[in-house]
Length: 145
Picture 1 (cartoon, rainbow, N blue to C red):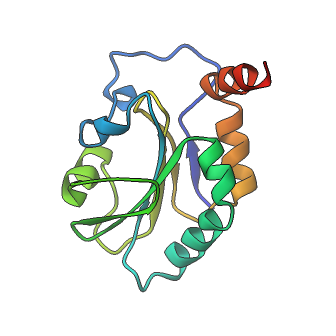
Picture 2 (cartoon, rainbow, N blue to C red; picture 1 turned 60 degrees about the horizontal axis):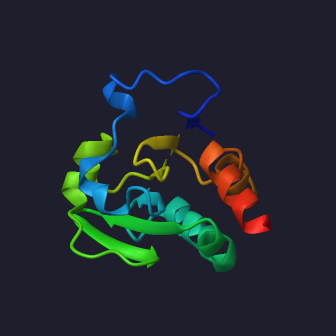
């Protein structure tokens, strides 16, 4: 299983384009974390990932998540609201896989890519990664008060 975690404890070089906000998804910046699923509808890994994510809608909502599926040039919101998104622009901006190939990307509220996947991830793993992020930790502290 290939996972690339782009979030870490080191200082991020903000001049590096790998850490730049994704322009085609700017509408979500500072409001939502976005999980983008790339695949055609006949892809078994995509179906497994989609079912896994949607099995815990309350956890997605609690983490301000939007889940998008990009299939070809089309974008469909699986969870949360999304209007007028261009699948090809998202694929280009994320340097995503060829149409029909599976991949998953997690964007933080700052609009940058935090995780790239070539295999499905469990909700437990995904939520642990999100919950370890400083912004999420701050949100949790606020809600406890």
